[in-house]
Image (cartoon, rainbow, N blue to C red):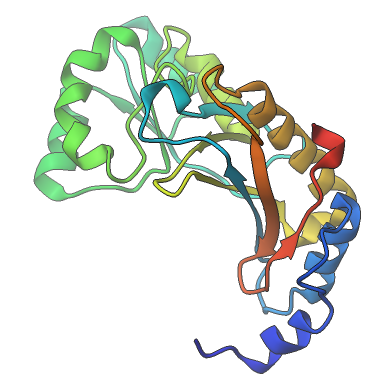
Amino acid sequence: MFRGKKYKESAKLIDRSVQYDPMEALSLVVKGASAKFDETVELHIKLGVDSRHADQQVRGAVVLPNGTGKTRRVLVFTKDAKVEDAKAAGADYVGGMELVEKITKENWFDFDVVVASPDMMGIVGRLGKVLGPKGLMPSPKAGTVTPNVGAAVKEIKAGKVEYRLDKTNIIHCPIGKVSFGPEKLQENMDTLVQAVVKAKPAAAKGQYIRSCTVASTMGPGVKVSTTKYL
């Protein structure tokens, strides 16, 4: 794979055989970020579970204390009095069947998160085939199917992130921007890792967190020691 000059320069700062203390790892990520835009910092956690088994799924949501640095567009499916609640909380789009049709007929996806009140899941369920593969289907576990849509929108706008396993048993999640600096990034990282540790399935055997890596959008990955979290 071709790697640019800046990437190679950043990679020289990192010893691939070392698991760094979280603060040291994040300092290296911030120092090595050389893009002309404010890069996102992502955390990648490999777990010792098998996501093919329902009792070993790891999924949830957590509000990062310093937010993600990204404004997320929220679509809410609800009706009656809750429409005003959602709008007052800052939802970008609120509605019902007309939004389902807009998505299916116009291939419209100008949103990052979908929230639904339970009484709307009958119609939202029709979007499973299009929202599911994009990771946008609302779920009670992630707190995006809830009677209190206003509170859900406020949390998302404040920096709530959803985490879930991919097919290779890895969680990929943003923990902020390079401009946050190592301290704020570590506060966010601590909050996320602690939530993942808390969500450990009873069926999980052996070592739960296999590895942990942080990286900026354009930078190399830095391995993190997870001793403090276990």
